[in-house]
Amino acid sequence: MKTLPVHLDLFALIILLGVAQGLFLGIFFLTGERGRVVSNRCIGWFMLGLAAIIAEIFLCYTNYMFQVLWLIDFSEPVNFTLGPLYFFFFYARLHKRLPRRWLWHLIPTVIWTLNSITWFYQPIEFKYNSYLHSYHPELSYIESDEYLPEDFTNLRDYVSEITLLSCAIYAFLSFLEIRKAFRRRGLSLLKPAPNHLGQLRNLVLLNLSFPILGIFIKPQFYEDLGDYILACYLTLLIYTTSFLVMRSSDFFVEEPEPEPEPPSARKKYEKSTLSEEVEEAVLQKLTRLMEDEKPYLQSDLSLPKLAQLLGTSSHHLSQLLNDRLEQSFFDLLATYRVREARQLLQDTGTTNLKIDEIAERVGYNSTSAFHTAFKRLTGQTPAQFRATATSSRSA
Image 1 (cartoon, rainbow, N blue to C red):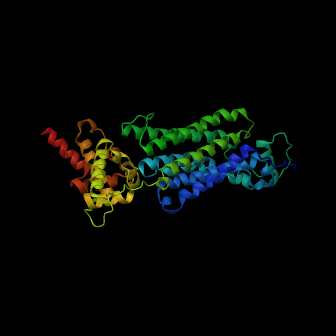
Image 2 (cartoon, rainbow, N blue to C red; image 1 turned 60 degrees about the vertical axis):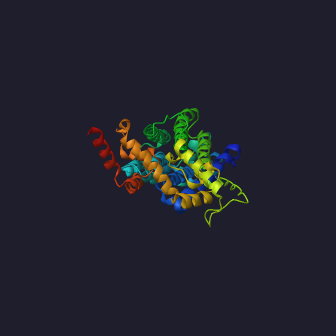
Image 3 (cartoon, one colour; image 1 turned 135 degrees about the horizontal axis):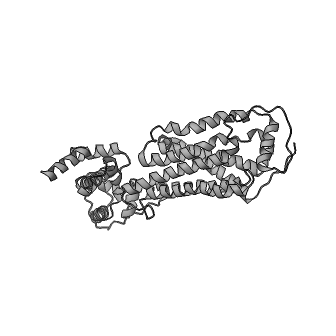
């Protein structure tokens, strides 16, 4: 069997970086407390799948596959998991659960995995020829009569096209889910949006562009020769996801220094480290912020983020809420969100909104959490409150 020397260039380096970062992100999302969140598990497995596919492209593009021919097409069964997993990620981020009958989406993966057995156990000559067919058609094949029956679906010659079609379908479904989420909040898809929705929209558009790029690239190259371009684009997708993860992390936000206390300031509370004047100023700023900008409508609002908006520290804000308002941060959020929900439930212009849509509008990702907070603060469920308001108007 004739082999070629290992070929390394800038594209090979970019692809290798994508493999490393894909493995890192996959493990990151699947481990610890993060792994308990269904959307994190979906994106984690998606990243590992991307890493496997990009790794095979790296081996083929650099000619290193000649050294490990037993690995040829090892990632092919993963092809039909990419589209569903990415769609599951978006759906779970928006609805906190997987779509109904989600297992049906994985049937093509199961079929192709079973089909892959018919070439995983082929002799090494068959795998050598398969590699040449895709990446080095200029080399001569090895003739052999020992090949096993292959591909009971008779679709393997079209696997690239079917994979791109699958990615396009699920990217479009993800786009529809994001568009629905924006419409439920009365937002334009093309305008600035709350942090988590804006990030999801950008990821959807980036993912939607991948099959479009594939449609333009594939016809320009023989078999898989253009896959290195797609691998570089997938690397871009992986690093974009990494950037968004770091961007939304409070770990990288510098905590503001507390305002210095006047030497003569009288402390109202023995344990307080803030002067009474500073406390009043922060409370007034908090009230104005919550009334005017309504940051509580953002589902990802956290104590550190609110503290940063107020120019104080998380510790001092928590202390202030507990001492002066006798509320925790989550109690404060619930108070404002439930008040906003009551207005929506009484408003005749929003009678078409379902309870879960109202929950999402006021910042709740979980409808059950919304129900719990609403009943605790009003003594009624949202449906009961709406019914009471409706009967009062008609009386």
